[in-house]
Amino acid sequence: MRIWRFLTIMLTALSTGMSFCHLLELPPRVFYFDAQLWITVTTKGLYYLFGTVGAVIEVGSVLTALVLTFLVRGRGSAFYLTLGGAISVVLALALWIAFVAPVNAELAKWTPTAFPENWAHYRNQWEYTHAINAIIKIIGLSLLVCSILVETPRVGAGQPDQA
Image (cartoon, rainbow, N blue to C red; front, side):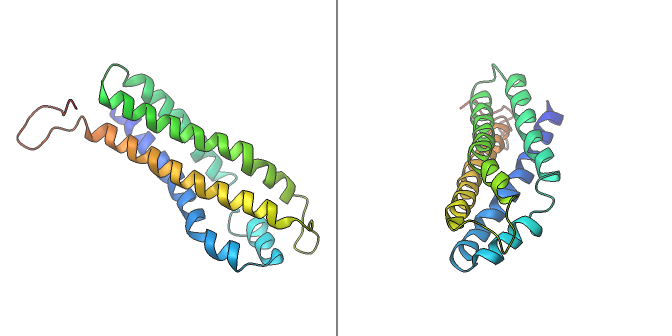
């Protein structure tokens, strides 16, 4: 159980960290980058390892959260908090598949000098879905951490919190 909790928290924290980076980068990328800069940075630079290493982390966080939910079934608040965390990471991945992956497929056809006139529509979908995912993952990570804290004995109490 401790190993699954550790793996779930670590993978979800790493996943949340990647999404939080997107959230922090959003204002300058949306308000100050022109098309050429946005396309170059997005397709050729900043996110190079997000599609490989990031994909393993994303899928790993979902799988470990689902397994952990199964392992803590019947443990009251810990189960419901873990379930909420698992639902959050699954939802974030589903949103990525539905809204970011299609933009990534479209971006693969572009160059910094050859892109559609409505490129900002794609940019906005890509950027704002990442921002929403960051918020969902922060909530999910918080729920997963709380699922552990609810079973952590209080100082002097000697018993796990059964709230």
